[in-house]
Length: 350
Image (cartoon, rainbow, N blue to C red; front, top):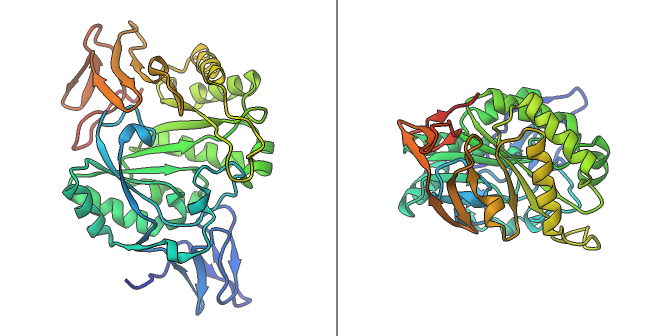
């Protein structure tokens, strides 16, 4: 498969190319690569080296993305490539995100082939995950379009670190997204991820105001982003700027990569964060990476009925009525927002 010329770049007056896909705006001489490692200057043009090349495929439940308000129990074809435009010290997929060996990209697959593969395995969706799809945006966009053409739902799992110039075009073909809100201080973003909080907040607002269904994940790291004050500030911002009904997942950290000296997140921390967020007005708050059926089930915010029960990845749709894509609690008729049918229909984005 030929390596295509990338989008979102221009030539400078000193024989370099400038990539403006993300806020880093890497400038590269001939043969040089950007921070993400997969976008490079080749003969005066910016190319995406990983187009059509995957580090592998897996069949996952949609809840593993995590998405709790999208086609409950659906099978998803997940894949990623290599590289990343963040430098998170705690990265849980660091073998892929920091990879500098393209031998790891063992599988070649065109966007059409990926869509066909998903259909052959009985999947309802395709997720761009494992490493951030923003850095392989051209490949992800083309694959999302191919998926939509055959009735599959495209999902982006991302840190949301993307430029204003590219944001709308990237998310337009995505029917659902889980965006990491890694912390709520710029100090954490600068020191631990090498990024900026403001860009991620802009992405969250954009996705919320678009036709893409949004859920948020926050990995709580002991001593770094798990204080009551920070969780409360984050939750109040979410309610004020995104609304109370955006699902928010608090996940447990496990020592990895360059933060192996930090202890795992205690389950009590996740429960405390969930209580704080709900106390601030968030209606759908979940715990992740721990065994907590109560914290992972979907409750009606009006009457408290369990509308979707989850026990790890065992999913049971209970008090949920779906009619022409609009979901309501079958006990009290309160609207439950999400993507509950395909072809896509988003219910109650109030």
